[in-house]
Image 1 (cartoon, rainbow, N blue to C red):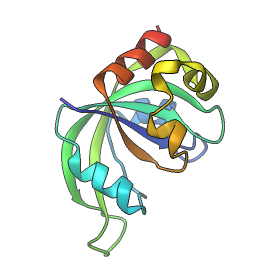
Image 2: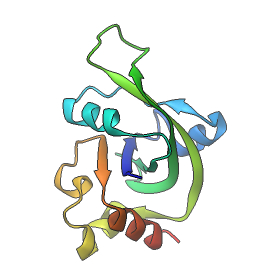
Image 3: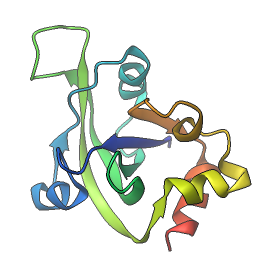
Image 4: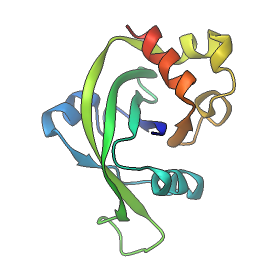
Length: 134
């Protein structure tokens, strides 16, 4: 199993809305590195849901329920989506400041490539963020 982090601005698509929907396709990715990360996602992979811009917190866990396919919001074959479903909310959201202050997380893409919207995490990094949020 692989682990990931996806970012969404809460005013565009919040964790609360995601939970109401129960499932969504992850669209709007227009960066090749992020697109390649979507293509690498496998059914059953776990994904941290991060509120960007406002809040700047990891707020929940989702899972990949359908692997990549053509983004239905565009005719451009370069862009893909995956389907995600919410798993659970973190008891305590984990802020970007907390992540930056944790020595074992200094190398994650969220810190090093702040504009990347879909990124891989090592299992130990994923588990550390979960521990911080429990």
